Length: 300
Ligand SMILES: [Zn+2]
Image (cartoon, protein in one colour):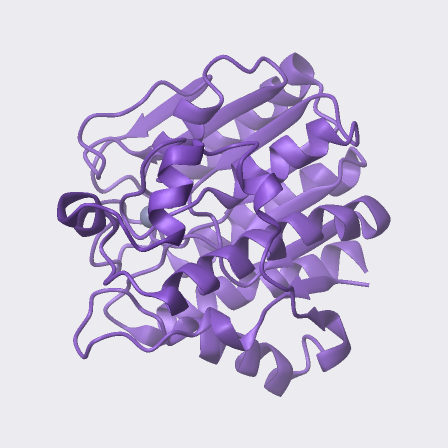
């Protein structure tokens, strides 16, 4: 059964005209339910995560400042959000969503969070709409609990997974792969285990060929027993922030490639949703919905 993490607290009212597309966290589950891709029984609502798992990944000093709403104005500004108790609760609930997905993925082969992919969160700071790093927290949980030995992070958001790269730069059991827009934020990139920076206006065929070649090499090289997939849809050509030119169909083929690879090789996979900032809201919802539709089609 496809288990999907989602909670009401994922949807947090923001100031009018805020750049962050908060409504997608409300509309996407509604769309998937409405069209019959999922039933309510597919959805589970996580509680806020116990901080002991946060502290396996993030520096205590940073976490303490964050949870007591004591970030400096500059630190707060870098996150892109107005800091509030509800924002922290939202983030910590999303963190547990990804962490709980791990258990479901081990059971069913795949599990997905309707949020997360907060890959710009470092051990000691947040930026770019990311306060804590859900993939890193869940990966460290897996290692700590000895549920996996070699983890592959496939980060296909248009922005580099700089936080994830920094967190795992000395951790050989987690291989970080980021394929992103070379000229997209962050301007100063961290070093992942494998970075592929794509030039502006990269189109479907080059994108998909590059991914296919690298995926098969990586599976041989890394021999992962667990995969995290950051499936941001800001690679779309309609995206306001992204600089690539991928079609909705190309984005869907990307997801199919990753999900089929995991299924074929019997490697459990957790998907975190990542970014999506298209001008046309339907593009965001459709592209994200495709990831969940494909998971149902391929795994169940
Ligand atoms: Zn992004």
